[in-house]
Length: 108
Ligand SMILES: [Zn+2]
Image: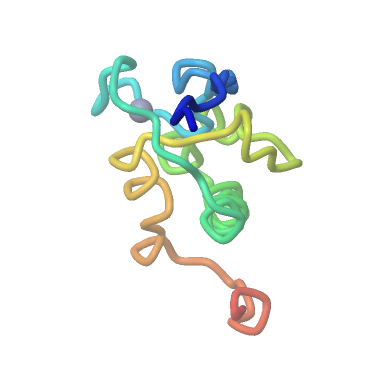
């Protein structure tokens, strides 16, 4: 009896490199573009979308962040879209902005 084992070929699946992901929220003034892009969840994406709604109601150009909002896609693709968490935190931190958004619309 031989103890020979069949040769196994391990097929390595090619996982897309993390560099293939695109950060959808980015502050060029507080963040370096080489920052690690984190995985974005559906929930976090919704946080971004609702933050956009708040930002776009701002009258000042600085608070409006239109150059950032413009880069955020309408449809979330987890394979492609990611975020810099530093940028994400800043962008979704809209508590200080005054808006008339019904709280029901924000509640999950
Ligand atoms: Zn960034």
